[in-house]
Image (cartoon, rainbow, N blue to C red; front, side, top):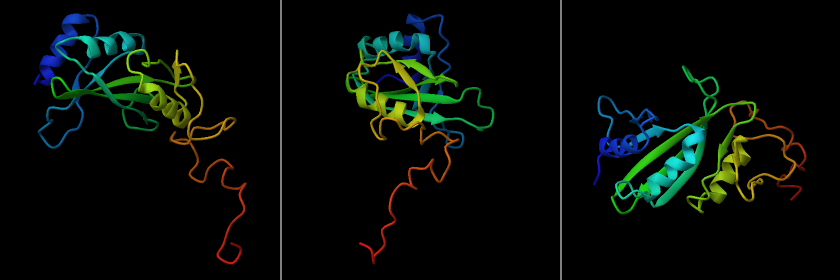
Length: 177
C-alpha cells in the first residue's frame, strides 16, 4: 500500500508545475493520520483525475463521492466553495481526497464524467444544492428540487425558513387529515 507521501511524489513527478498543497484530511491532536487531500486548480482537474485513475502507481478506480463545502464566513477562507472528490484505489487499498475551489458569482468546474461515469448524479446534486456548474456535463439539471427553483438550499446564505417553498402547502393537522 502506497503512503500518502508516495502518492504525492507520483503526482509531483508527473505534474511538476502543480504544488497540490497536500494536507491531512482531518487533524486529531498531533496525529494527522494517513488520509490526505490535495488541492487542484479547476483548469488542471480533468487531467489530474485521468492520471489518478490510470497511472499504475495510483490506480484510483472508483469515485466514491462528490460533495461541496460552502466556506462563507469561515475564518481565513480564501474561496467560497470547495468541491471535494473522494477517490478509492481498490488495487492499492488507499484513498485520497481532491479539493477544487471556486467562487461566486458563477462557480464553474469541468465535469469528470469523462473519467468516471458515476459522477453524473453526484455532480447534479452539487449543482442543485450549491449552484456549482459542471461544464461539459451531458444532463446538468436539478435532481432534488424542481425546475424553476431559483435558490440553492445548502448554501450558507440560504434562509433557515426557506424562500417560500414551505408557505405554498396546506397545513395538515390531525383533525383535518
